[in-house]
Length: 524
Image (cartoon, rainbow, N blue to C red; front, side):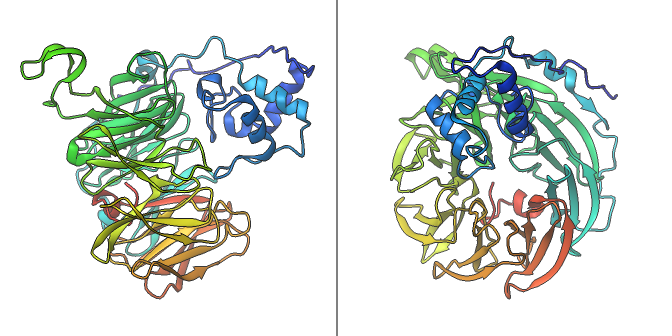
């Protein structure tokens, strides 16, 4: 059965603001429409960029918000408009976005259930791939230029299918453990389930208004959706039927929070979520036999005398002294290496949190703004090390995952967003896409010597970022991140260009095998 999307989510919001600096409501509305709406939505509820409403700006003071509008924000697509708008116009914009939307649109159980679309009922499609390519060596390529997804044959390195996606996919697609299904999350809350064996969109549901990312459970039965708006963590089953909405707030229920990210910790049978506005980490078990969670005064743990809640699909809280916006799992998934993006100038911005002890066990020396979610790991001189790029500085931090000490800071051309490798490759690749001068340069690091050994600059002046290896690690696919862009394919040993596939701003590419086997060279 196919359920048509309702017309409930059409916002005709009009703001009548009186701004203290004398700028008229019409002026500030026009400025928002001209300079902000394309990324943040005409209704301020988010698009490519996050929603601009007081609920999302709790950690950003107004003077700092003025600075962001004036000068831009490092490590983002936010460009400053200080040369275009006067100081009083910028202040008026800040007052505008800090003004509550009333009434705030609801997006709960009724809205989620009404939005669900079913194109192919479970069991209605063939249970085997409908093509000759290796289904485990496919690439899923997100093209943000015209909001499409391309599917590539990883052996022939040729496209076999292309389809239109939802607007502004974000957070990376996630796969079921057999590699058959892939799930996409869009910034405006749509979750799409795609059948890679039949090359068809199976189902969709809108799980939020402004969404950060989604995760798929290790058994393939559950999907968790991290929302910025509303402040919720939504649990769906594999057919995208709503199972539970977890409102996100601190343990006392006084401070609500956006969810920065949610990831699957399959060995623990749980999802782990980072919270943007509350100093906690949540772990949500999808094991039906999970132990009950103490939630108040306890008389006897053994006999569960006291206040307990079911352990299944409810959060276990770890209290922290600092925010944790982004994190990386250790190999055993019992610890996370996390970072706050609250202070890019801090000398120590990272922490290690043990999920069993439910407390911080170490600090990490990570200058600038590390992008731990893009970290990779490998064995170096008998030690397991983790490497993370930096969104604010041109360096790669190499960390000993036993002592938590920083072994080396490798200087790069500029701030970068992505880092990738493969267990069969000696090299790690990192971009400098956040740098104006070196956004066109990819650097290659020798994982044994921890030195930069090569640079690639295929198209001077054009953004060159994000790589992924083929299943066997023989080839590397890199993105020429432009509207008239391409996937540039390199030999992973010689670093020679092999071929190009034209693409519309290919922002990311994901190999099925590398993802489902949790390759040490790619993000999880």
